Length: 108
Image 1 (cartoon, rainbow, N blue to C red):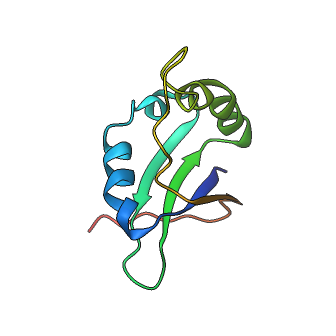
Image 2 (image 1 turned 30 degrees about the vertical axis):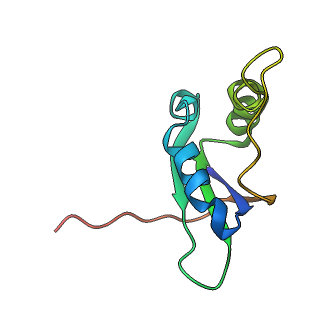
């Protein structure tokens, strides 16, 4: 079954709009990655300053290949001498899960 990766980003209130705009304008390389199945950016509603970046992958190997390939390239900046923008998140933690059960809505 699939694997789920959740990147937990601590984002101060004044950086929320910046983070969301950066995700909205992202290159979209993840959608074309081999083994990629799903992406969601989850905004906190109350009681926390942590956004969740949810991705689902066919297997661990697909996720690792993306991490070492297009994701790594995308996060290394805009080329020689280019200045990277200040991160919107003040912290990041990666959670990993194996999908052991899943369900979809029943067609009525």
